[in-house]
Amino acid sequence: MFTATEAVPVAKVVAGNKRYPGVVALDNVNFTLNKGEVRALLGKNGAGKSTLIRMLTGSERPDSGDIWIGETRLEGDEATLTRRAAELGVRAVYQELSLVEGLTVAENLCLGQWPRRNGMIDYLQMAQDAQRCLQALGVDVSPEQLVSGLSPAQKQLVEIARVMKGEPRVVILDEPTSSLASAEVELVISAVKKMSALGVAVIYVSHRMEEIRRIASCATVMRDGQVAGDVMLENTSTHHIVSLMLGRDHVDIAPVAPQEIVDQAVLEVRALRHKPKLEDISFTLRRGEVLGIAGLLGAGRSELLKAIVGLEEYEQGEIVINGEKITHPDYGDMLKRGIGYTPENRKEAG
Image 1 (cartoon, helix red, strand yellow):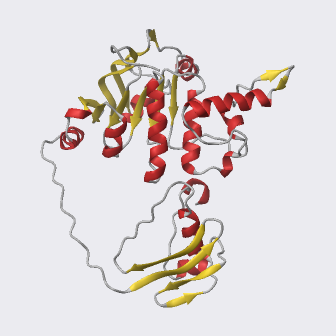
Image 2: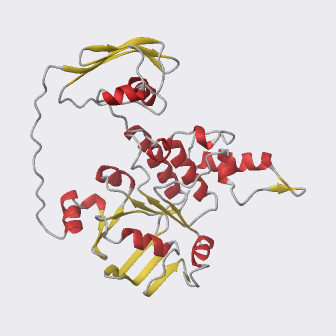
Image 3: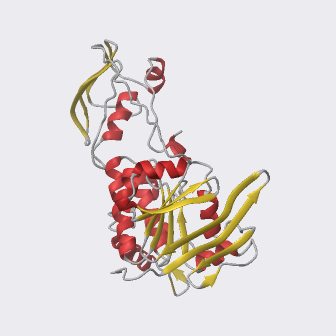
């Protein structure tokens, strides 16, 4: 278990500059990350966060300035710089996950680094290595399960476990919870805390301030390619952080006027049953109303929505739209009736 007794830098950017045609992406940026630290990287879109991340991972070379990983300067030609950064212990998990859907969790964790025995892939050793890696982060997923059968939250955790397999110094998480529900976010937060306890430094990119305060101790705020400020989160208000991001002291937050709810049911679900996840589900949605559906991972939220829009059949129950009963809904018909659906995995489901 890692205990921080003093600041030990594991990554530094010194006077980093990067320009593209017509754009100053980074302007004299200084950035330091210490061992075991969870540092939030904040800023509006276009503030320079992605360019800084690409420099640390070796995907971009600075026009001027130095990148240090530990006590080693990151240098080399463009063809080898990314590999060199990985060798020095820098890993990144991006919003677009890079898992291979047709392989198992264990195969994804060991991709390109297969354990071998007598010239053959040692699948038993692979499963054991994967299980240790998953357990270290508290990820409750079977190494033998196909990635295609995992939820988005489970895939995110497997991606994090994969970068942890090589015992990294620095892990960069780019919006890791952007497509996750609140209950699933807890799994990611727990994994990040375990990484920090192991001494891994984490750069955490997110726009969710409440989540950032729970997971990070400090933050670097960027604006227009520059570091607008480095702050300790426990004694810095959200108002001040937003002011640093926007470049002005006063931030107007307009109050949201309450919307009148009309007592007119536009969607009714009556005693819906779809085993094994759904049993006697009933609710009414009125015009102008926003209805939240909460639950833990695997509680049946996705199955309920798919049944309503006609993507999955249900054994029993009724769906009523504007007073009209729909016996066997199909997705095309529900679209015509004004019922839209955005899936949790939009990249694969469309």
